[in-house]
Picture 1 (cartoon, rainbow, N blue to C red):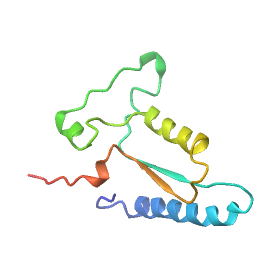
Picture 2 (picture 1 turned 45 degrees about the horizontal axis):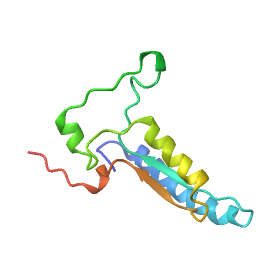
Picture 3 (picture 1 turned 90 degrees about the vertical axis):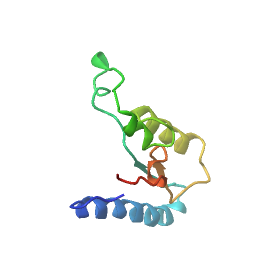
Picture 4 (picture 1 turned 135 degrees about the vertical axis):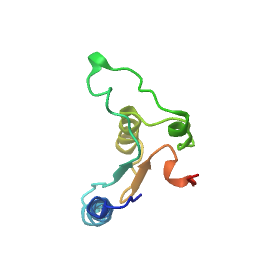
Length: 110
């Protein structure tokens, strides 16, 4: 998703998806699968140091932006990586969006 003033960031994300497609085609004949992950809102602040790890507090509005009812955590991305490595041997050239459904939900500002 894009916000005003994020053109370079948006272009780089699109470039990663395009690179994933191209590499999947080029490397497939060698038995190499190439996929990418596009994470949504992943809370990493207090999760970075396990000694002080604690569950972050989010507002109801923050949680309501996600159909799953919460903001993501690093483990959500790790599980997606594990899936792609261990289970998805017929998957290549794909962009896996891990965002709790945030990008498929319409949010209207009041």
